[in-house]
Image 1 (cartoon, rainbow, N blue to C red):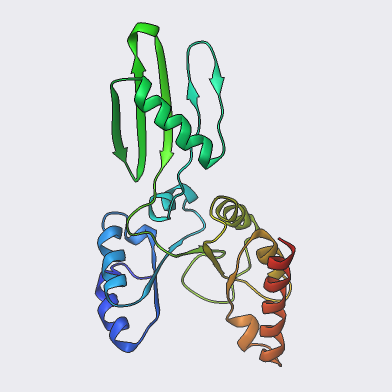
Image 2 (image 1 turned 60 degrees about the vertical axis):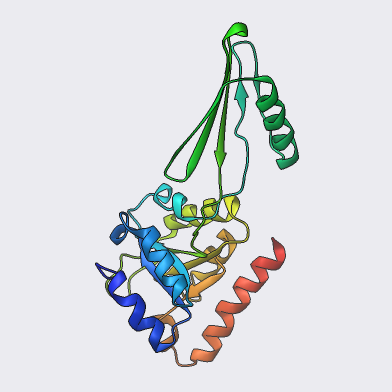
Length: 223
């Protein structure tokens, strides 16, 4: 983890790096600029979060799919799930209810439809794709700083949430990964594994690597 990732994008790009993962904690105010610079250097952008950082801090950086949470009236509440139904309902509301307003904050747009004569208010919460999303999320399963720390299984809740909401996202885990912990990470939905001590400290590193890879591949087949 570095305090100013912007300083390292160009040197790593020139050195031939294919990806650049930065900590959200160090880039809350300039992550858009950082992602654009990473992509301009031909690298794949990724974002990491420490164990104590809530997963919600990542949402503005991840590509969103369009969906409708629901629309509500004073008389009934409706829930809509499919993208097709969402499109139909939005088109219908746009034609029937005026005026409508669009505001945006932190990458999440809200549309409010009102028709005062019928005293009906419709609220649609939409998640829209950001123009410069990251392509990988790294969930730290130890505190960053030094190797050999114990795996934190409670971090798998973050992995499960990400995998449920973003099925095609690359989800990486780093910290305490080895033969005894890999199945927890793989079954939660992690498909990129960082392992240090468990590999380089093993008598047969190749065997450990094969075991880690097999666990991830088996979990992906089952899911």
